[in-house]
Length: 451
Ligand SMILES: O=C([S-])c1cc(C(=O)S)c[n+]([C@@H]2O[C@H](COP(=O)(O)O)[C@@H](O)[C@H]2O)c1
Ligand code: NI
Image (cartoon, rainbow, N blue to C red; front, top):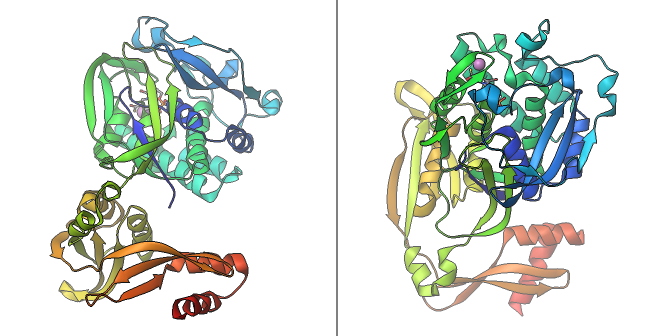
């Protein structure tokens, strides 16, 4: 199981804010730069620096476009027709940047999106962007994330402009900086081994913003469509300006796995990313790497056993979902803390061969697991039953074997006898480490328990 990140979007979210927050939370910069250099995209340099925002020391990720591709993305006068105070100070200008050496002697493979300033460019469609991502030296997981983010954007654009998805040509997001931002987010998430992303809600501003289409209401149409399609919870604030960009909303829609924080958790690392636009609420995105700390750990054994007396069973019958999607769902449910997941082949109404999905879980995780089932399968309803159960008192222990330590569970039977069960993962790890077979480790364990 990987790591969990909590994205705190009190000041909205954008592509560059997300990259900066993840870098600040420990994503490997060298790995990111290497991945970006492998993309067939030129005409930019990346700067990572520390800046002061609202007096805080935070990370800034800046995609500096060559003059011919520069856009107005951070130009407050252009965006909102008035200037805001410049509360962001660069602490180390030009610190930590790399420049793509090929930038000035190549044929541009990408397009410019501001035809009104530099007309005559062809457009970048989803297909071209998929090719660019495909050619990069990124892990499959990072590629998949980047593709998903772009797909979310493309769907929203298609809807906003009333064209088929294949005909969408990206304007602002088609630009180099957006490709870099989105791929960078995917690479950083992969590098931090993030498998759970908690985003309780997005804060959005109010008013209008100027972009390629002209003056648009906030949330801009692409953001509104993403929020609608993915049912992202939004809080509209009084802040004048665009806090959530289409790229930011698409990132959240593509990577969010839940909206609820665990009841109790520890924070392992904090990263804060700076936005470039200056609004009255400082544009900061905080990413926290968190780890659930089970409340049981501070309770007595007896209390925790009492709590275990109830368990929930979620069930749903699915007759229109692919095996691939169901397999993926099972992984996601297990990673999100399901106690167990299984599928049963069933024949249901209208003579349909189908699957019954069953998930066993505790109350705390039930909502999150239901969300995953709705998100990843085609079902439109889930049955739920709270069940009583009897559990044996048990405790975790370690047994020393000639090849190393083996984790075991010791259970007490109703007649007081004790039974000791080796943990499968620990047996497998020891077999792997020692080069012995699974059965040799099991028999070594048996010998210690027999003596
Ligand atoms: O490029 C896209 S998808 C786009 C769509 C829209 C619509 O609402 S339609 C608006 N914009 C504006 O462009 C800038 C930059 O957005 P990024 O997501 O590329 O950072 C922003 O002000 C959007 O409102 C872009
Ligand atoms: Ni648009």
